[in-house]
Image (tube, rainbow, N blue to C red; front, side, top):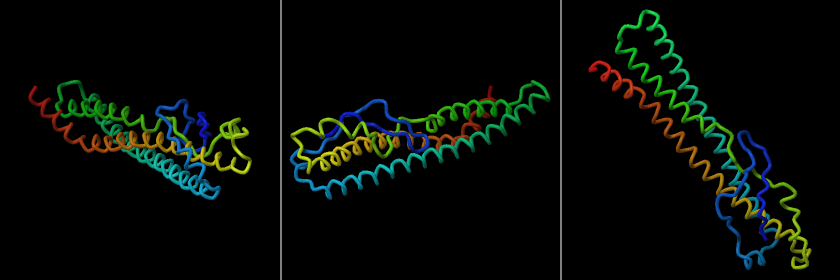
Amino acid sequence: MPTRNPGVPQRPTHILPSQQERQPRWCAKLENKKKLTEADARFYLEQAEKFLLDLIDAHKTIVDRTNTLLGLLITILTALIGYTVTKFETGFDRDNLRDAVLVVIAYLVLCGIYLIRNIRPTNYMAIGSQPRSILVDHFFTEYIPKTERIIYILSSEVERCQHKIDQNQEINNRKWKVYRNGIYILAAIPVIFLVAYLIAVTI
């Protein structure tokens, strides 16, 4: 039988324990649980934990790639700010090129704010459970024979793993979208600059 407490320890970088459940938890059918052997339950848990570990590794990859994008963005932003400061030192007369660069600077600042959401701490679910989530009373009732207790505990962990997988996949999908958008954002810099320059020339 599953327990309602997800009980998530803090382990990988950028991973915090979940504060609440955001979607209904999947539960295996009771008749299927009764047919499980201990070896079956351990195999299912092993596979679930492997999949969960892959999601955690994917999350780290997203964070690393986002950091790379932010590093590139900051490098470009620093160069453009240096150029703008130099232009202002020579005077405040109208300068179409400088004005276009100012627009690009504002664009990059907004892009950076958008990308930062990918590297902030996330309510991410790690492998394993706290003892208080496993040693619960309903595993030690007369309705569960001692010889089958471990099977019910393992099947409960399998269900908990599925819940963690669902939550982590949702987070990863959202962060992959931000990362992909970040690539498009950087690729659009020349277009933004050209449009800003043409507008500055025609005004």
